[in-house]
Image 1 (cartoon, rainbow, N blue to C red):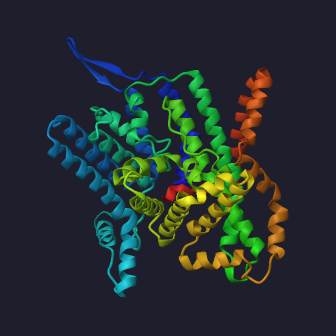
Image 2 (image 1 turned 45 degrees about the vertical axis):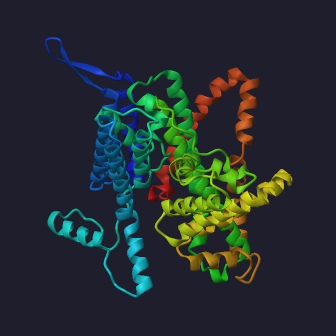
Image 3 (image 1 turned 180 degrees about the vertical axis):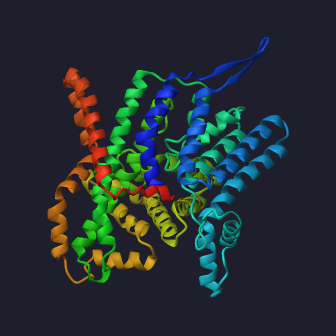
Length: 500
């Protein structure tokens, strides 16, 4: 899918954008006297492009996305048709939510569920989905996995997006989308279909049927896209190589310095990888006339864990707040229930990221830290010097990434021990080599993860408007050429959030 994404971006996207820019929002096709068929041309192009983009990487599972879209669209139309019948509206909502959660349960969590059952009860039950895959392969030879269920790319993103439509429609926060092409173009928006941000229908409702594309938006989008591409290709990829090497080492003999350098590399890799892709998606959305919500806001400058999660993966946090935390009662029903609600939300947040106990514990870890801040520690953090509270938050986040990207709880524990010297040494030749060879990329990542670069650009724009106006397009061209050159020469180009 990584290859298909990059191939699409570099070879097909320019052609799609050119056609898109010259297309009107709607085309009226005469059908006879005083009759005409109105075709939402731009939405149709997005729909076709989205399915093509997704099917290139997932030729079989594109059917799953189409089924999800059809059910949610139908549920929305039925809610609209029977607006005065609360029972039918409730049934439609239940069908939509159960269908979307059911898809996640089958394709994302079924292996985890049966593995857990087999471990607890010492059984050997085969996941029924695997049996179905084998049967399909026997009949149609689709090449589906017969050992583990393959996760459809982006299923966690598009199911949450689609659910936001039916839930908000049920709550009467939005108006129904009558056009199937319009609704499907929303679900299949190719800029963010596989790795976010999670765009709720409410975020783009006004732009689905009527949006404008102009030179200003296109230039702004190109600049945002190139910024994201640079984050991904030049920063995340380069520092990610360090973590790949360290993660594969023997933790029992690893020096503390090597462990810290490794997990710090992943700390910056996942930030620049995911925020880079989000920036690319926001930039592409701008080019298409959409205003996608911001997904990151310099999270490593946070002064508390609560603040960190207001700055990291903002759209996911918003989704869980709006559709889980508030419906559970939020903080309106007393301290005990507020703490319960926080643990539920953070357990689900961990589970959303992956079908693994590490992810669940990672989510609960953040839930516990936020609860500790809620019951009093947050006030202490506010009184501490900013540098101290930022260091605390950053360290807690680094420890969290150990849980996030180690395969098992046992491996996470071994790595924690290595970080605190259980490997027998503070520094060894590997640590010295990593540090001396990569000090520049670490410094650049630290600098780029703060607001310093943005502040410098704003200051330069204010003082040298004319120079800035010419420098930015030149910088964009240089970044695109540099990233393209790097991608051609490098075989290391993971997209971390494609697996979610």
